[in-house]
Length: 613
Figure 1: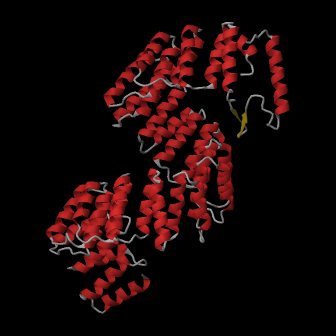
Figure 2: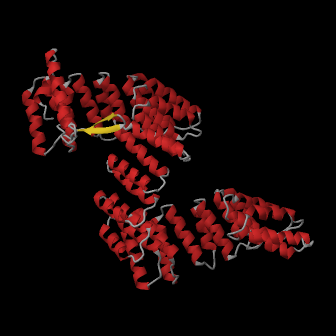
Figure 3: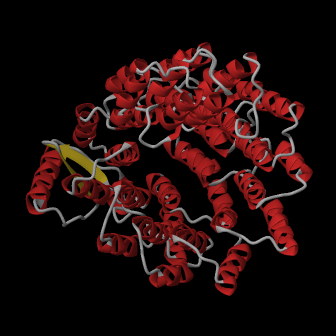
């Protein structure tokens, strides 16, 4: 550009600014060359009294590949107004600009202009419009245009296959693929990747295998993108061994190849294999780190996810939004407020752009770590909120027992023009349940139909919990009987918990019968009923429940408790001896028990008899 500006200066000094051919070459270089300057091209273009079609085309092309493709549309309109008719070199880039922010109206207008100007049958123009319709998800319009193309190129086939694949139309993709085979159209890497993508998305192993066999038989030259797509396809279709064979046979494995294989193991719950392969990676990028961290979060290994995050920072890889969302999720589950605050400070110190998703993760973390006011402050400071944002804050208020505040937030959500969804009502009904707002809960449960939402099992569970908490066991039982779906273990569990609270064994016994018929063996529910019998001193019934548990091999899942001391998070389970200070901890517990008994505390019978549960 420095040399070009010197040349431009010489053109001006020698009075050659009327040389259209020379100026056209300048505009062309500045607009489309990788070393060019689009802004300079436009300034130069504006100084030309009568720019020609060549100049317009290059400037339109330049903007179509820029961060602001909409300028191409303005130039196109300016070009037509100046009496210059676009040609087949203009249209593809104008259509590409239409696809940047897909607008059906714009594409149809430009398409009509192209037909009117006699360019509707040009292959490059037709393919451009085909891609535009696909980008707008107007698959029927795309197919109509595709069928009208008399001389289809491979680009036409690829666009149509990619469009159907994006829309999830697996059957149509297979039919097009078969038609290509019948017509003898040779596939390229873009076709192969599209077909493998459809196979992965729909778990269609037959299609994926056929593509793999096609590659082997034809000897078609493939690249790492196709091979990575094959690994992904086999992994998502449940054939890890085939994925590993393809991976092992790769001569030049890139970071994407390694990450694909790591994801393959992780998505099948083989987290140790995933971590072992991850540690073997010669080069790790941010996507690789995000992948392995998120895998640990999904498996509930939150401490390990945090440790990987620290390793990532030490290795010099800069975390991005996806990384921080994973870490904040780990903090939420562990209740580690100190680490959550560290992550928040990291975001601020590194000027990381905070998206709506990241804001939502911050709110959720602070709420679940007990800092509700901070969560509310962040929520109200958000420049833009989506439905998820409102759902999180309503759920947070419900969690902390602020039922009336949750209802107020729900009303504000509607005032802001956002329509609630199923999750919104789950949070709202939960808030009513925790705060004893029976009438409000019934009102909002009935309101769901106003928004076209049919209550699902989670909503019924909330209502049963609400009625049960406040002793309305008969009403809760009636509601269960009226449910359009079969009650699950959560619904029965909510009612069984209420039966224990109010000592109602008459309803509790039939519930256990229902659970046995469901074939659900949730240890917590059996323990709950066992405790109910022991509290009522019905030892024989209690022994029967214990016998059922023993015969069915049911064991109570041990709960985990977290406590944060001086910014460090510790976790404990019943009879846990793993902690370094376990001897001192148990000594202190013995002292506490001694003092409790000394002041006259008597534990409940269930605490004595069934302490193993």
